[in-house]
Amino acid sequence: MALKSIYLPEPSFEGEMARIGGEEHRHLVVARAEAGEPVEIFDGKGNVWAAAIVSVGKREALMRVSEQRRIEAPAADVTLAQALIRTAAFELVIEKAVELGITRIVPFVASRSNVTAARRPDRWLRIIVEAAKQSKRYHLPFIADPVGFEAVLSMPAASRILFAERGGGPLKSALSGSPVLYLIGPEGGWTDDELSAAKDCGFCLVSLGEGILKAETAAIVGGALIRYELEKNG
Amino acid sequence: MALKSIYLPEPSFEGEMARIGGEEHRHLVVARAEAGEPVEIFDGKGNVWAAAIVSVGKREALMRVSEQRRIEAPAADVTLAQALIRTAAFELVIEKAVELGITRIVPFVASRSNVTAARRPDRWLRIIVEAAKQSKRYHLPFIADPVGFEAVLSMPAASRILFAERGGGPLKSALSGSPVLYLIGPEGGWTDDELSAAKDCGFCLVSLGEGILKAETAAIVGGALIRYELEKNG
Image 1 (spheres, helix red, strand yellow):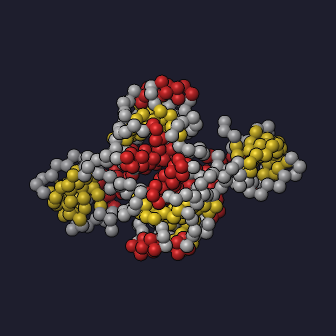
Image 2: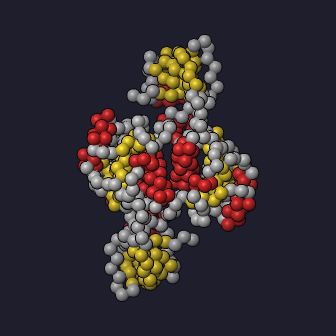
Image 3: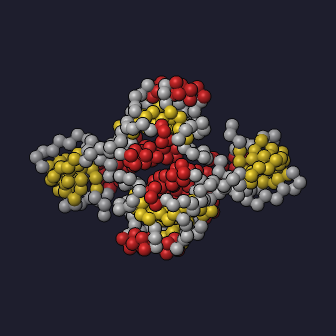
């Protein structure tokens, strides 16, 4: 049985005891967690505590906390600026971004964005937390409130990449080190205005190879290739 | 409006006319296809016909077919051997494999496979056809009936890769050209017996980098990286 992870963004222990309420407590109840079971508590910022369940009550669970360890953040600092797309696809992107160790997700409104997509920061955070538990990512990516395209264009990074369906160059020559910022457009694709604005702002247009990838697939594949290139050279 | 694609695995035209029935006819009805609308017909084997709708009746649609073109298959021949995993994850893998231009999908039963996952070849084919239409992949991947792990181990390829959570080497040194066969395990991971059997059969164990990827994410990321490396060198 996999070790259960409990997310506690601002841990305040009473001596060696921790009280777990709210959503994380409900998860323990649903998972039939039992007294004596070893667990781990993490704060999403790289701090992890070994712990053991003392009791699971109706409103809270009690844990005895033992040693703390510190997990380093992934070496590469990668920001995904993702156009708002339909809800299921956007949520898939969030989940996979966590698995890939993306540092930051910035949703933005593109000309062809599906802006009827639900903006649900609370739900986005839950998806991030659950994905982090499963993939043992102890640094949660930061997810920003949706911004406009101009705000994305003004974000600084050592490597600034826009993945385009056509007309892009190879990834390798666009990567000049970390931090990396990469842009993924909406289902309907980029407009010509957006592409030239990005070029004017110094972004490199990069191709993801032959064939058309859906927006969410491009986000996953783009992130995976960036990570692959950075890890190879770092 | 995007050009509608109609899948006709065994086209038999009457002169320059084509009759479309069954599932593809229902799609046209749902999409409110109209007389005069240009469409394309494809057979999933690289043949594409430009056509125009003549009529959409209750039981079939009639098309007038004009010129035919031939689309080359992706240069790289890549087979994904995917352990049976839960249905939603398995279906996501199929869809993304089409987008990535994977040639062949071989489902297999691993020791820790979720064999309660529905084996629904009809549904798998529908997912493949719909993904092919969206990503304009005119060569459908072949999907095999599920086999045992031994059958996978005996499949020939120039590059034979097993993606492992730990203990794997870099992808680049495992890739010695096309055709490529890559193996993705079930949610619960590989058993030690499976790993050593694969090594005995000459498979290269490859790592997908730091962090734990879910089975379906590993299938997508692994396929994307293989394609990336092959296109770079081809």
